Image 1: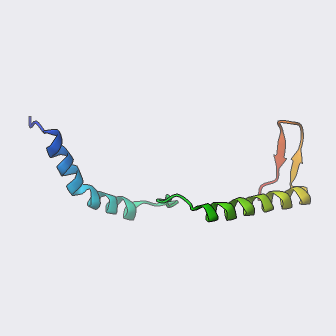
Image 2: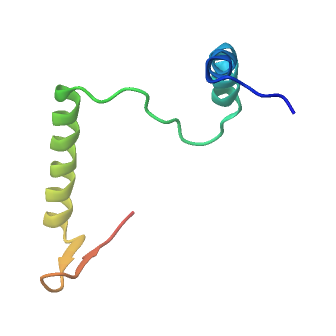
Image 3: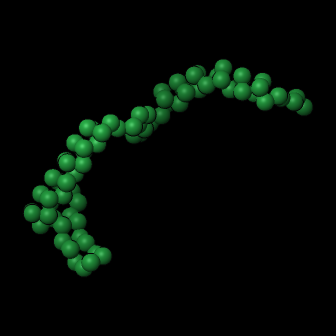
Length: 76
């Protein structure tokens, strides 16, 4: 059985990392995961859009507050 030193193992991992990452990105199916955090302006715009949609749905009657802890949201 071969014994590995920690430095050798790290070196092998770093050599293959780019190839493995490329393979995982090309073979992945479904939703793409975000690699960078959103900047402050982008977050503010998204917050504003969500609040606007919430207020519109509330005005159109899609959201019904049944009790303090129970709400009904008609999702389309």
